[in-house]
Image 1 (cartoon, one colour):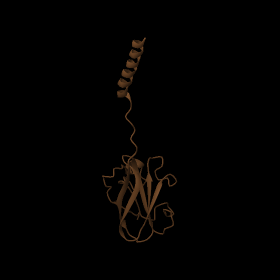
Image 2 (cartoon, one colour):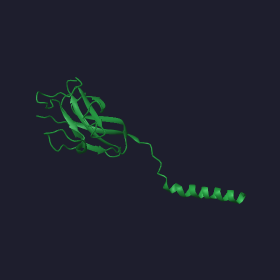
Image 3 (cartoon, helix red, strand yellow):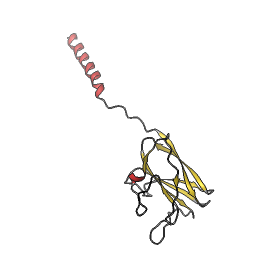
Image 4 (cartoon, helix red, strand yellow):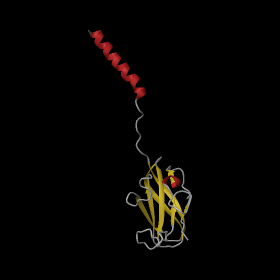
Length: 155
């Protein structure tokens, strides 16, 4: 009887040990980092730079779903933006505008065209339409710097 019991225990141990190879690897917690980039072509030493941070097509350019970060503008030329809490390896897209009159809105004209400077985190394929998430997205890696983002105006 004792031999039978030891055999069962030994079989269970072997089964458990051989099953360890088939277990999925442990899930590693997200690694946070700080995204730092420069915004060029700031023409007015006033107002606020608003940065919208987006994760997917579903939230892209939706102000209600965006993570918003603001940076006060106090001089012309170039502004540096630092965004903590970004996840390494996560895909993001950035939409930026310079709220020159500090009214908290991205102002447009009668035709819906922007009247305040703006930029995206990637190269635009066309100025005749709003970019798609995949066109301006990037995978965050704290060791890789984003290129300098240049504010543009419609006119």
